[in-house]
Amino acid sequence: MTTPHATTPHELAVLRQRYRLERERRVRPDGMAQYRDTEAEFGYYAADPYTAPTERAALRDTVDVAVIGGGFGGILAGARLRQQGVKGVRIVERGGDFGGTWYWNRYPGIHCDIESHVYLPLLDETGYVPDWKYSPGEEIRHYAVRIARKFDLYADALFSTGVTSLTWDETAEVWIVATDRGDTFRATYVVNATGTLTEPKLPSIPGIENFRGHTFHTSRWDYAYTGGTPEGGMTGLANKRVGIVGTGATGIQVVPHLARDAAHLYVFQRTPSTVDIRANRRTTARDVGADREGWARKRRENYLRIVSGEPEEQDLVADQWTASAGLLEKLLPSFRRQGDRKTFEVAYEAADAAKMNELRTRVERTVTDPETAEKLKPWYRYACKRPTFSDLYYPAFNRDNVTLVDTADTHGIERITENGVVVGDTVLELDCLIFATGFFVGASGVHTGKLPVHGRGGGQLLHSWAEQGPRTLHGFTSNGFPNLIQMGSFQNASSVNFTHVLDEQATHAAALVAAAEAKGALIEPSRETEDAWIAVIAEDAPDHAWFHAECTPGYYNREGRGRPNGPTAFPYGAVAFHQLLARWREESIGEVLQSRADARP
Ligand code: NDP
Image 1 (cartoon, helix red, strand yellow):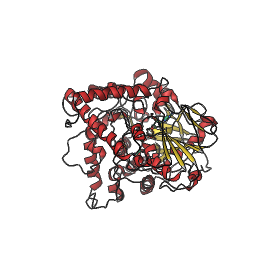
Image 2 (cartoon, rainbow, N blue to C red; image 1 turned 60 degrees about the vertical axis):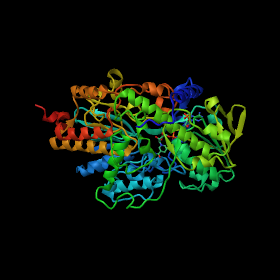
Image 3 (cartoon, rainbow, N blue to C red; image 1 turned 90 degrees about the vertical axis):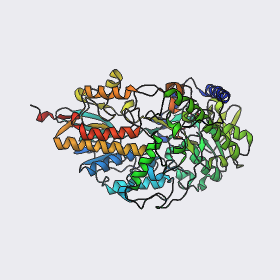
Image 4 (cartoon, rainbow, N blue to C red; image 1 turned 30 degrees about the horizontal axis):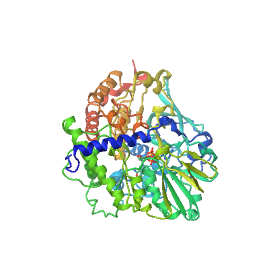
C-alpha cells in the first residue's frame, strides 16, 4: 500500500474528529436490542413467498450424510461428497429450493457484487460462462439449481424443512436429525452449512405493528403486490407512496428500481453507505480466458490472493475490491498484513482517507441538490461498513419523485403509525413500507443455540463452548461431537469472495468423510489437537478491536459495542489457510480418525 500525497497529518486529524462526532451522533444505548426477530406476530416477514410447502410423510430412515442448508455451502458440500463417491447425501433446506441467500433475496436490482466469474463456483466443472461481469440474482439462483442437478442433489433433498436439533446416538454412533416437519432420521455424518446472514431482522420501531399499509422485508419480496420481476417493472407501485428503510448493500441495489416505478419514494437513511463505481458490463468467454482449461480456478485463485493481501503481479479481475484490497485488512479477521504493524497502520490510515475522500467526491459530482449530496456522504473509515457499488443509486436522488429522509439525529425512524412514518416533526403518509434492514449475523447456526446440538454424553455444543470457549480443529470439527463438520468462517478463514472459501471447506469436509469411510472410523479431534489449533490462531490474532470500537455503529461492530479481539480466525489469510489444509489432508488427517465402538478392543 502506498501513501497518497493528498492527505496531510492535519487533514487526518480533522477527519478523525469528524468521524468521532458522526459516530457519537449515531450510537444508540440499546445497541443490538434495537432489533426484533421475525417470529410470532412478525413471522409474516419471514414466511416463504415463493414456494408453498408440499405435504409429505415424516421420515425415519438413515442416510450417509445430512447437509444442513441448501445454499452454496450445502450445494458445494454435496458436490464434493459426490466426487468422493458418497451416495446417501440428504440436503435439508428451509427454502422451497436450492440457492440459500439467492433463493430468499429476489428484490429488484439484485446482483452479485463480486465478479460472477470468480463468485460462481465450479465453473470449470459445469462448463458455464456468465455473460455479465456482475450476474443478476436470478442467474445465480438458476446456476445453484444447475449445480444441484448436475451432482444429483435433488433426489434426497428435503425442502421447506428446518432442522430443529441434532443428537448423537452414542450406541449406534449416528446423528439423530430432528426437523420442524416431524422427521427424525439418522445420519452417519452431519455437515452444517447454515450460512451467516439468514435471519431477517426488523427495527423495534414503536408502532411498527400498527401500520395498515403494505409491508415486507427485502429478503421476501412481494411481487404479488409490486408487480414486476427482479429486473424491475413494478407496475403495481405506479400510484403508490413507498418508503424504504435501510441503505446497506441491499438498499443501494433496490432504490433505483423503486425510484423508477413508485409514484413517490422516501428513502429512510440512518448511515450512508460508501457507494463505489460498479461498471457492470457484458463479457465474452474470451474476455475472461474461458477458452483455456482450468480458467475459472486460475481466476479465482488470482482474485483470492489479491483480496487476502498476498503479493500478485497480475490482477485478472481488476474491480473496486481488488483496487481497494489494502483496505480489507480491518474488514477480515483473516488477512495477510504486509510488513511491520506500525508502518502498516500509518500507510493504512492515509490510504483509507484518500479512498473515503474519493467516495465523498463521487457523491458531490453526481447528486445535483447540494443538501441531499451532503446527507449522502459517508463519514467513517472504509472498513467500518460493508462497501457497496452502484452507478444507479446516486442518480436516483436527482429524480423529482425521490426524497431522502435523513434519520441520523433521531437514531432512525421514531414511530410508525397506521398510515405512515414519523421522523422528527415530519409525518409521512405511505402506502407501502419496505424494510431493507438486514439480518442477524450467524443466527441460524449452532453459535446462538437456535440449532441445539447434543454430542457425547448429551452435552450441548453451545454450553460446552460457553464454559470453555469455542473449541475446534480448523473450525470444522470438535471433540465430543463426532462426525459433525461445520462450515463457516469461525476459527477458519474468510474472504470477500465467500463462495471460494466455501468450496475449499466443502472439499475439506468431503475429504474428511472419505477418509473416515475408508478406515471405518469416526471423525473427532482430541482436546490436544484442538488446543494446538487454538494456539496457532491465537499466536498473531489481529488487533482490530480498537478500530471497530471507533467505527460508526453497524453489524460489523455489534452496533457500536466493538468487535472482540481474539482468535476468531486463522490470522494469515485464506490462501495460506487453504495451503495449510491441503498439507494437513496429505500428512495428518489420520489424527482425527478414531475407532468406532464396535471396532474398539
Ligand atoms: P445491512 O445490515 O447492511 O443494512 C441495514 C440497513 O438498515 C442499514 O442502512 C441500517 O442503518 C438501516 N436501519 C436499521 N434500522 C434502522 C432504523 N431503525 N431506521 C433507519 N434505518 C435503519 O443489511 P443489508 O441487507 O443491506 O446487507 C446485509 C449484508 O448482505 C451485506 O452487508 C452483505 O454482506 C450482504 N449483501 C450482499 C450483496 C451482494 O451483492 N453480494 C447484496 C446485498 C447484501 P445503519 O447503517 O445506521 O445501521
